[in-house]
Image (cartoon, rainbow, N blue to C red; front, side, top):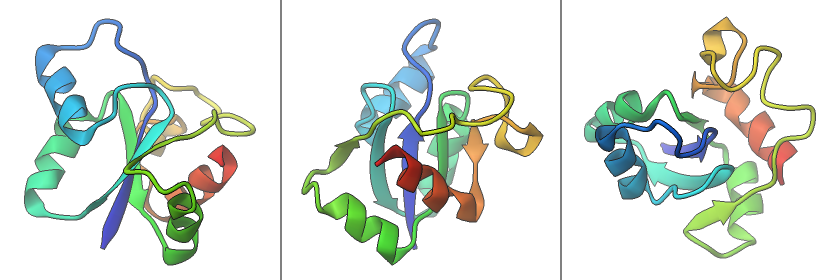
Length: 113
């Protein structure tokens, strides 16, 4: 299963562990996306960087739309209608933008293209 990871927040007040994790993903700027194959080691990295990213499984339709750009890291636009009603500092389960989105990741990516 493939997972799409989108960086939501910038570089201000980021710890070195989170900075290293984001660099390993290749997410250097806000609104950049990367698609990676799911693995157990990936889950620890996602947990470490969760205050700055959102992620979820991506379906084939959305993946093919992303692949039209032909890059490894996709520079996307900010999402239409925003990330969530509580903004980019709150977890997705609480109505914000951060953390695991599950199947709603496809909706976010389509709004960012």
